[in-house]
Length: 632
Image 1 (cartoon, rainbow, N blue to C red):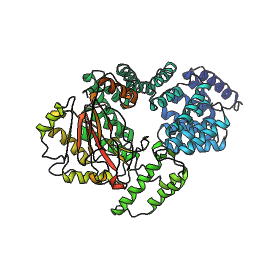
Image 2: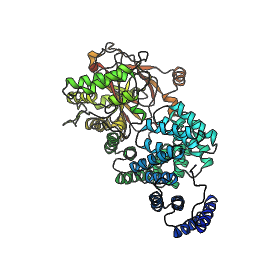
Image 3: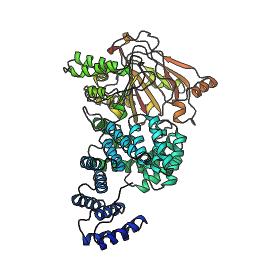
Image 4: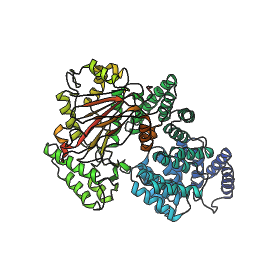
């Protein structure tokens, strides 16, 4: 799609060598093409066309620095030569010099407004900087100039996917594929959307189409492996991750996923090697780029696989601090910063008032921004309806919405956080006697630990998930819900009750927060060995004291069920519970009561009816230890 000069300029030798070089270039004989371009430059060192084409050869043959130097010389010789500007921008972007690349792409489209490839590359650079709206405008401008430019359709789809417009993204990818049926990258992107939508078998087919066209792309092997893993096909997934690692030995995520797939398919001795390699690769990436949040996230997940929970959560906290720093613009194009619900905004306003009452904030502009958003939410929108924040709303609250702008201190408790008076013998006997494993414990935490943890949950701006159909909010350790006190509780609990936890590591921590009248989480089981669920809201907030807690059935989910079946397929779970004769344990909610049970047991939130008011919101915290199979 690069616009090359169709007229010949220069002396006959220059012309002849340039034409010969182009012929070799088009035929894939790059060494011969290079030799001819160098002959041109021996005659005229400032020939912009030869410099540009020689730069392209260098890039294709893996000499990035030489290619960049050629493009720079070409632009110095011909400052308004669009192909060289476009290629220089790409080389700068690939070298991590995105701001410089943006300036070059802007110049390219200024001198050649109909240059669709440069418009698309400008959009991709803007997207990398988090400017999704400007990027989408560039892609649409490229398509106005060249409606059949498949790369622009594909890039548009990628931007729409990032901001959560899944149907529109699929339409754009579909258009790219219709124009170019062998466009491997577009098929790869279709696989990504389908995976995100939990349509795993369709995703697998899309990735396989991509690999049939372009078998040597590590990222597509990685994507296919991920979809296979989520479908429970771990042996096949491991083969795809192995292929990704062979193609890209520095691919930390593929190494980690390979380790997890091997562990889940019954090869823990092989898994450990790949997890260790992922740790080293992630650390190397962080050494090169300390603000690489993805590398921090991979490091945290890999450390969890080795049982190093506290180091893992610290790495994940670093990832969140980078991605969700207040006022950050580099990630502003992500879906999490562009969508909300009325219920979520109501919660945030209540939290701001609470923080103001505690003297934590004194700046009224934060509240004013949220009130601007409330005024722009359609009256017809329900509390749980996903709402797209328009540009005015993002300007009003973009520096704080879904940002980690306040985290309350919750240090370790000297002397212990878990109540030392818990009767180990009685609790463990109750758990094993109520087969297949369930007990509940009152006065779970010490008074000091309970008060500190409650303050952390009320004050910290960590409630980032608000897209649940039942309207509750979620906070996760891998996304900011972590503090020394939580880690202390997670560390102490197995010490108090070794007969229940053994040496199972803590793998997951999350919390959910509900309003005064919300349906809770429906039927599901968790991918873990042991589940700990405890409540911290004061008892007088609960208007139905014999409810508001948990229902736990006394039958384990079938071992062959995959993640989707025991988390999403409510009809299958209801049928299984009825056919197996399962009976529910109803555990009423009490402040500082913990329910400990076998994570294979299907469970659900009981009916919720709480007093209105921010401090009365129902909060439950969950720890998951080990994996569903018992393997790590």
